[in-house]
Length: 143
Image (cartoon, rainbow, N blue to C red):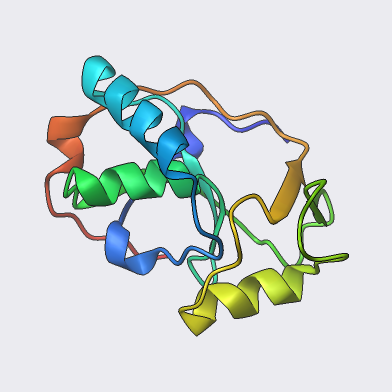
């Protein structure tokens, strides 16, 4: 399966749940680029059941700083989709990591250190452009 622009949904920020901290330097670079582009060019990957962020923690952090109401995501069935795998980054404090641990951490309100989880997702992300003005608007989303 290949994703396209029709798979991208705009969801409220408060629905999303991070599971790891970010690197502020990377966030600041992305914040500068997002302001220059005046929009988002890549969606986050999110578990459709829990709202757990699988890919896009820095984009989420940028949205919080910009006080956006919504953010572009592609929702996946994380636990059931065998094409999505999780491993650890080299140098991580953990030796192993499971999908269940990622979900539990996202629901706990606590966070792993930056670059703990490394998700492999076989589908490529579609190129998008969603203006910041559109992301500042309230909207409804039903997962």
